[in-house]
Image (tube, rainbow, N blue to C red; front, side, top):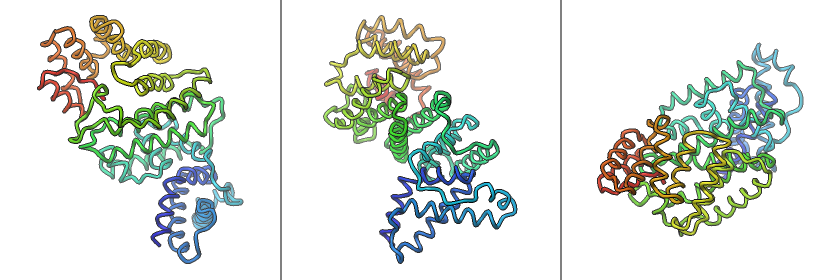
Length: 406
């Protein structure tokens, strides 16, 4: 029994999204597909120890779930009306396209961002409501309600669990990528000391990003997101010290970075660049690659990074992009030029913690220590992440005002 349970856990972790995708597409109902698949897993736990594990566990589970769903429809009056629409042979063994279709459905524009994130993690990644709730620091009933509401909205809107036509990819793909990116950031920016559950989020997001890149090889933004997350994850082991405190990029031990992962991400990035359609994720990945491939912080190619920010601003003209460019300007043209760029953003970013912390760094470089301390206090007042707050307080208390996030 222990071996069968371990196998089913692995199949669920790897294939839940694909299995739910193919069943939802045929049944037109994610709730029904999910219930039937859970029943099929229960039946497998009862039968496989005696009968043996089938040659295709996923195929067996999908067929069993299909039969259970059809039986349920036959028993229900409303279901009998629907049965004629779904009658036929069980669906074929699921493929990667089925999971991709499910992800697109979970990120449908009719759902708001919290519902998109919750449903993607639950349906496409197979995470239970309890695990998602723990990761996002909300009560389990709250997360369960979000899942119910998301599935209800999809059903009411008649959303089909099918891949959108290729001409709709440019409209639909940004929401999918933004959801995966948000999931990763929720885990990546968390304090390892205070919220260890969130490490699961980075792994789930990275897995989703890699699968999207594999399933959509002609989409440079999918590859760009995967490379960006891989490059960030490659130095995850050095972002916190033994006491769980955040470590700045320039202070991280680069010998502990995952060089194999960095080289793989860089290779992915080079392939994506040949598609000649640079987007925000691809350009952010290129910036991250400059940092990851630099032998030391001092030998970072800041001129190249500044140029990449200029290109990024053309496709994503936001003040946060300009702030990133100003950080590069500090190393190419000096702190005075960088501070002038930062101050130009005052009206748009005065409520943004990293604007204040960047100003503090530049003011300190210019010997304006009292102003630097005040800017750090403003950043601390706006910061909510425990690790960032500890770092800012530590730098403020020691007089070393270097509050950039690692």
